[in-house]
Every structure is written in C-alpha cells, then in structure tokens.
Image (cartoon, rainbow, N blue to C red):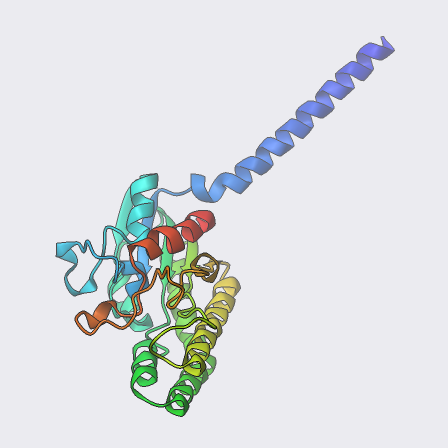
Length: 268
C-alpha cells in the first residue's frame, strides 16, 4: 500500500513536471505560433536594394524577391505578407507611407531604419570624395545626430508600430560593418574605413538600445557579415558602382540570404 502511494505520488509529480515543461515550451514558441500576418517595414536594407530581382510594381522602392523579408515569407508562409519597405526611407517616411498594413492580427514585424536619417549616403559620398579629415568631420556630425535627434525619431516609429499592431513581435535589424580592416584593398584609406565601421557600430548601438527599451528584438547582422565585408575577397556588399550608384554600399543577394535572413529567422 505504501509503495502504491509512493508510485502514485511519483507519477503525479512527473505529470506535473511534464505539464510545466510543456507549458514553458509553448510559452517559448508563442512568438512564432502567434504569427498570422507579417509586415516588412524599413529602408533600402529591408527592401532589397542591391539584391536585384526587383518587383516591378514596387517602382522606386526597389523591393526585391531576393530580400530577406521576401525570402522569409516564402519559407514560412505567413497568413498574410505586406512588404512596404522602401529605398531611401527615413523614419518620417515609415510613419507616413508604410504602416497601413499593421493591425491587431499582425503577428510579426521587421524593420531597418535610421541610416538615412543619420545621413548614411552623404557620409559615404564625403568619405569617397574628400580627405581623411573631411570624412572624419562628417562622421562626427552624423554621430552627433545619432545622439541628439535619432533616438526620439526611433521612439516615435516604434511606439506607433506597437499602437497599431499590439500583438506583434517586432524585430529591428541593424546594419553591417562595411570594411575588413588590415587587408590590401584599393579605394578608401584605412583611416576612413575604420571610421566608417565605427560609425556603423555607433548607429547599431543606438538602434539596439531604443529597440530594447520598447521590448523589441534587435537583430545584429555584424556577426553574419564578418568575413564578408568589402576588401574581404568575399564581399556581401556592393562597393562604389558609378553605373548603378543606388546599389553602392548595399547588401548583395548573398548578403540578404546569408547575412540578414539567418539573423531575422533566429530572432523571429
């Protein structure tokens, strides 16, 4: 009789533990399980500029079927997929033009934004055309903007996303470092390359902090792009291309499939 009671107790304990573990697993799986609709927001690093295979109906937004949002949607078949990311977008453009698909049934949102607000294109133009000191001065101006103005702009975008899609799991994607340092490479000086990489780190840190403060997940692509920067011999980024200036310093198709997609998939 005593053994029977012990056996029953052990069985009930194991059942309780099993139930708790099952509940924990279900809780951990909830972000993926909750995904009904997926909305991809952001700038050119999300629309897929540089990856080619552009969707004709996307016009100047240059949305690509080889971009990480499109690849993720093709692999996971969400119940709906709205792709509003657009080349050249700033935070104000996201607010004005990209948020219409968000609603209470949106389960997943991805976004990369902030680089254009901080003057990414002008930084690269200045560093290509001017001296080391001119490049460093322009980067210092960009960093000052990241400190003083960008956090508030990101807060507005992130708060609006949460208000419009309160059930969504939001993944904020960062930007890669551009150059492999210490390698023999034609073009910019080592001083400029190091400064540009430092600026990318500075921007990513600011974006990651704002994302965390809003309860969003930050996807750090610097890890996956390591070894595939410009001057690495296996670059996943376009260098300066005077024949197609828009694609300059943007991820290639391999950068989306090998650099951005794994990070997003892991975070989603």
